[in-house]
Image (tube, rainbow, N blue to C red; front, side, top):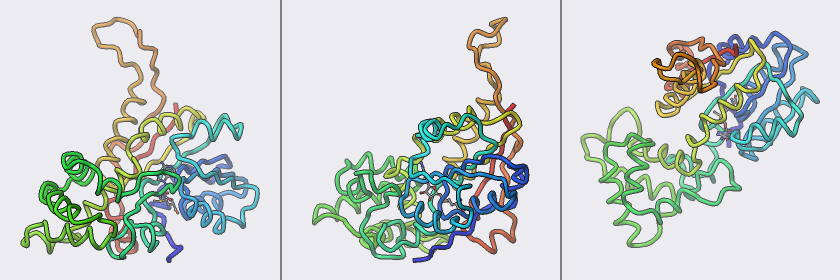
Amino acid sequence: MTLQHIPVFLGEVLEALRCERPGLYVDCTVGAGGHAKGILTSSPENRLIGIDWDQEAIGIASENLKGFGARVTLVREDFSSLKTVLDELKIREVDGFLFDLGLSSVQLASKERGFSFQEDSPLDMRMDRRKEVMASDLINKLPARDLVRILKVYGEERWAGRIVSGILRERDKGPITMTRQLSTIVCSAIPHAYRAGRIHPATKTFQALRIAVNRELDQLDTAIKDAVGYLKTGGRICVISFHSLEDRIVKEVFRTLERGCTCPPRIPYCVCGFRKSITVLTRKPIRPSASEINNNPRARSAKLRVAERV
Ligand SMILES: C[S@@+](CC[C@H](N)C(=O)[O-])C[C@H]1O[C@@H](n2cnc3c(N)ncnc32)[C@H](O)[C@@H]1O
């Protein structure tokens, strides 16, 4: 298994967070610790709290960051519990937050975890293995209409209906338990003419199931709002997303936090009490350069949005 993960937008993130200014940074998705290492190296006084819900990621980050000693605190937790994590550590203010969403290359390459259709492994796909529901549970137990919705909404899969019919036929014979089995069902469900595209035919189905298993989009807006609540004035938040659903959530939360007051214009004074809490620094998301994509094809779909606490 590879323990390598090339951090996306590393230079842009370090610059946006102004990490050369000594401070406390929270990496809400520490993964293999690539961005974390960059943050800690930017100033010898920087401290970092790294959060990840995957025990294996915490183990790898701890190994990769051990040279920084007590400047690093790693916590295995869902970033939706950010408030609890920071309150338990008695942290009141933070200089910068990073969310680098989705899956790491380490998780993708892990043979037993079921994220990749390139390996034959049990259909698990849980990033946090304390959770009970695996991809095989969804595939074998959900009614057809729910599966279709998952593939359409989370995978933007145009052949969702055909793929789910294939799944239903197969699961009538016996449970679908392995990644290859699912990948074969998907490939045979997609019309011949569409199978030889730029991406593997099973990519969208695997993405959709992974998002559903991990409920990746459920708490993102709350976590970003919570993070902003801890930012010092002038502190910054960076969010890297890898598909349009995530990016849409980030864009909308940033817009809401920047707008503040939600009262209709006909009301002459504010009754809602919401105040503008950030200025968005990226009107359009930052996209990777050609050389970054060349060096790290995973960066292809990445978008970075940055905001500053007012
Ligand atoms: C793209 S990787 C981060 C890689 C990291 N920036 C680096 O440079 O090594 C995303 C990480 O976020 C974690 N993750 C995703 N959603 C999470 C959540 N809700 N709570 C905690 N960790 C999460 C995943 O387990 C994964 O390790």
